[in-house]
Image 1 (spheres, helix red, strand yellow):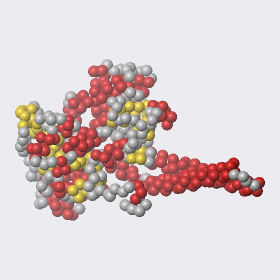
Image 2 (cartoon, one colour; image 1 turned 90 degrees about the vertical axis):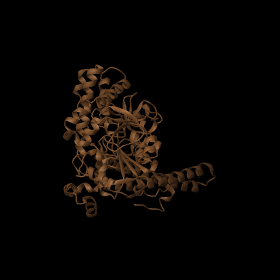
Image 3 (cartoon, rainbow, N blue to C red; image 1 turned 180 degrees about the vertical axis):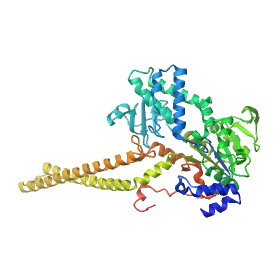
Image 4 (cartoon, one colour; image 1 turned 135 degrees about the vertical axis):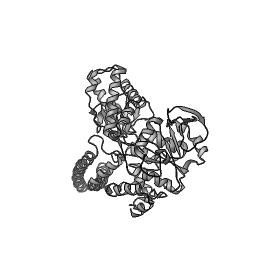
Amino acid sequence: MEQIIRNLISYNPQKFKLLTELIEDDAESSRGIFVNRTLKMDEIKYIGFDMDYTLAIYNKKEIEELAFNLSIDSLIKNKNYPEIIKEIVYDPYYVIRGLVIDKVNGNILKLDRHKYVRRAEHGKKKLTNKEIRDYYPTGKIKQSDEQFISVDTLFSLPEAHMFCCFVDLKDKGLLEGDYSKLFDDIKECIDTVHRDNSLKSIVSSDLKKYVYKDLRLPLVLDKFREKGKKLFLLTNSEWTYTNTIMTYLLENTILEYKSWTDFFDIIICQAKKPDFFVKKNPFYEIDINTGDKIREVNNFEKNKIYANGNYNQFEEIIGSLGDQVLYIGDHIYGDILRSNKDSGWRTVLVIEELEEELEKLQYVSQDLKNIKKKREKKDKVEYELKMYMNKLKKLETLKNSAQLTEKEIELVDKAIEVFNNELKMLEEKIEKLARQIDIISNKIDSTFHHKWGQIFQESYEISRFGDQVKDYACIYTSRLSNFFFYPVNNYFKSQKDIMPHEVQYQKYS
């Protein structure tokens, strides 16, 4: 920590003040950065940032409730929905990120990494295992089907909760239309309130209520710049809103930056991600007073603002390719998957919920150890059971097929009786262990989320969301300012991958 302070102060009184305040908040210093694929920061020339939920952290309950209520109003006004939907109260804890909406059947699903449905609700009614099999006979879904919608961003949580509530209302005969239409109407209205300035104007008028001001953010950006990194902002938000949010977060935080724009070498708004990574849209310069596009451009200038564009032309202009660029965002598909897959950029995924998950993992750490031991014990007993069953089968075959004396038959019968007793004892042991495992598992689950459990795990497997994080994010963390605790040119090294047959010979912490 002392070295960080010496590096960052640089005889700047504003930095010293910020750092003094942050030292008192030392509990936050446990936030970490986690590595899926080795990343050498000294090879990175450009670092890019999304804005919403990356540079700008929103106060979750307030922003989601606002989006929810505005969308309800829009559905009544523009889609002629009945006033009864105004009685719905938004529950910010009802769903979690990583779920999948089945808009055809009115279900919300949690999948494991292999896309098997492990938990499901129809509206707000929990589905039994049998009901899940009735809906999904193979147990697995094809997520490429249009009926399945991913809940991959925090912005998606209000629409998921609203859909659950609407399904219940429809099943009671209080809403018309099929489930797909209900979802499409919800999606259209929520997208509209995000686009038409109705939500953003309210946020902009009360920034303190809706936006969290992270004191480490300017220090982290300054730290990157001091070590020679070029910084760019790449956001889908329009210029006016971007300017409002970034002014609130960065203006007048560090003396040598006269404006928040001085933190960045390139600023691109209305990027239309993921189209930015897959289409050939040109870049335009924006009038900073009106937000209107002025002209098409083929170069970037400091203190000018740009819109649209594409990653191919971006790389040509900056003269850096693929793994020389690091992009930090919160959206698996728009920010991470597309930037990683199509451009080859290195990626950091910001997962706000990670902080709470880590705290809860610490809380249930002993339970996790216990359940691991009991599962191992259950596996061992099940192996013994199979061995006895095989022996019993051989004895029964011997008795039925061989020419045995009465004495030999009597001995075989006694052995069969002994084995049957052993089988019964082993089966009882397995049932007891299974009950104990269920009790511990339910306790662990309820510690995380009373309906959906952990975000990153499901049924002894990595969840679908956890698998996506593993596949597409080079590194991940709970917030951008966690880089405060790491050297700018840190070597983020992943653990060595091992095959299942190597596990017993190699132990890694």
